[in-house]
Image (cartoon, rainbow, N blue to C red; front, side, top):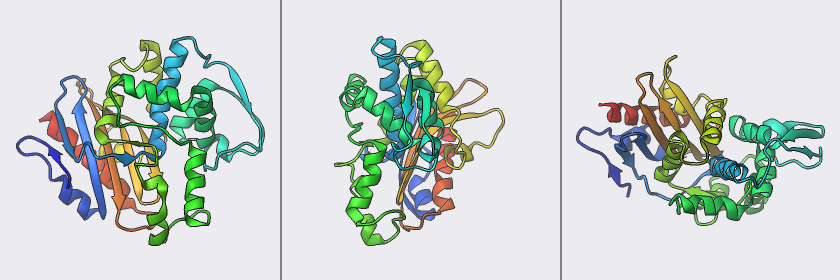
Length: 292
């Protein structure tokens, strides 16, 4: 059963998600006042590529502490690639690039190879310790992007695509007890920390905000705010039947709202525009409620 956080006149998120053919969970909060609204906000859920945000924060904190130099360059040989359709994962030749620019590719393009190289440098323990320090004890990174893809192939006995319901039921990547995981509330809180300059140093937080604002996917959170004067920053996550995004919506009057929406679709089809769009619709309804 989903537990809602809402005041009088809160949106009917349950009906909204059901009409889109998904089960949904969400949480939104005014970054400055703490006013909140949610639907199943504390449900442990797999994060898919949203694990790259805790990794980004841990990377910046290590850089702030002088433990690594994000301007340092690393060469990724052509034969060392994590599967993925974007960034270095999609390139054919050796790539020499700075850690900072790899972090940009990891967030803006959701590049899996960049994420895995950075995760090897930062370390699982450091990422999870960083989350613990913020009280985000339900957020855990236990797999790299390559490991997620390998687990799906191993669980089903074949490669992409995964559309058979029996295959979907076998995916450990969809089990929060075994996969990278968080909750809508904790993902939104992490974004709030970045926007309040509390996740790392002020320069590092400013840089993280700029990178998160450059994400190229406009079909989820951003689709709910089609206005030139409203900025939407975020990070998506996608694995079979799971679509999610967490981020921040900023209004010209200074209002700032951290939002996180997770969905699991009833259908196993790869292309589901309604399931993508409802993330933006739910976010818009939540923010409108908070702005009232």
